[in-house]
Image: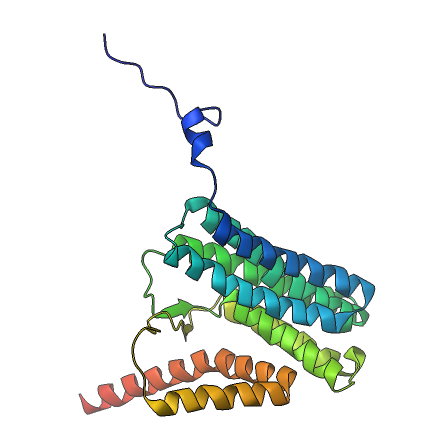
Length: 254
């Protein structure tokens, strides 16, 4: 008589013993907390704190995956948990913060713009999860949701730092939110920086550049960070135009 193996159910002791890796999920939980904290602060009217919390969530989100790879604690649970955390921190939180700060007085257009961003983040994360194994690791297809969140939150942070009211720039905020939401679901490619090897030796001038970058960020942090992500958000379109121009030049020579 053949041996009957136990079914793998939620009540199987074998599955219960596997557990969950603490270290990478700790960073993911911290990022989720920052996203939730940003929403709470926006409800209280503390929009600068909300914007800063989104940036902190972005840093933590960048660390959880690297920690998982370095410690060999990658798991399917961690990947799904990370996506859900990203949806809160980089999808819902930026949309609600911007809506409460500048878009709520625009009526229907305001919440539609916020929804376009939120839906764009959800679709971007869903597409990323389903095409992870077939896409070029060097590039992201569409603007990454953390970068889109930094673009939107950075604008809020800069305006508050310069003492500009949200109502005075609500049309710019509306256009920026829609731009970020649509860019997340386009086929425009953005460099992922995943092929950079931090263990490789670099020229001395590279270290000097890093020191200068820290100095610039320290001088005016909101403007420097916002400018950085504006450049990144536009870089995909610039590279796409360069590729189109090259194709046209090649076709003419043929």
